[in-house]
Image (cartoon, rainbow, N blue to C red):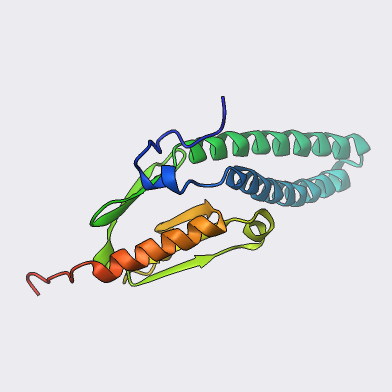
Length: 181
């Protein structure tokens, strides 16, 4: 079964400007790096303490085997999580709002009206640069919106198109009227 965004049906923005499949590999590599570093540190520390206490080299080998199993299970979990996350990632630019649905276990849906958008920017982390991926962030007056409201893992052309369309829609959006202030 090919890897595709199953929720991005024809006529939605994410079907026209899809996420790149390389995003899955990038996220798996990022997770693998974290698992390897974290478990290497944990197992190294516990193996050293256990070896000093017991003085038997078999403890070191057992800790190494345990680390390899845990790292392997972590990578398998990362593969399942990222494939599922990718398949269920959805975004659509409607007439008056953008809708973003994402998540693995805890699924979230974000609906953001264009008149609330204050800043739109495109960025890359070091792995994004390596894989040629871009993230499009939407900021509102709230502090965490740039982290939560973003479309991650698009190519350069799609990132530029998304930014341009979002900029235009946010400029054309009617100002919000305040009620009860």
